[in-house]
Length: 138
Figure 1 (cartoon, rainbow, N blue to C red):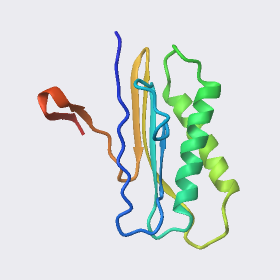
Figure 2: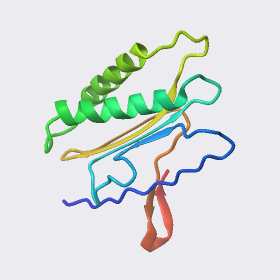
Figure 3: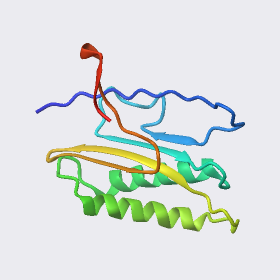
Figure 4: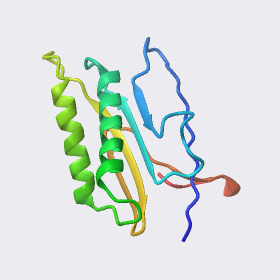
């Protein structure tokens, strides 16, 4: 089965002075169809949200591209290993502040066995069918 996807993103600062979200594939670099999508958004009220989101997004995508063979099933253990690598990288950037930097995570990986969806925090995944003008999955 062939799955066609399209990466779409909206960046809005809102009331913040800086952007604290990171995405993979990066805006403008997204191929028409990809098998990996990650969104991280720095946690409000914590220091360095933009560093946390960028670190986790970059480290997870790099880890998966380097350690998880394309064309094979992507397992929960592979996800946990990528997440652990991201946590280790995040810990290495700890600035010692009382409110530790943190980020939400929304994750989607298509693979021959299906797809793996995961989220941490309040970011969401939507499956939208524009031709039907409806949200299939939230």
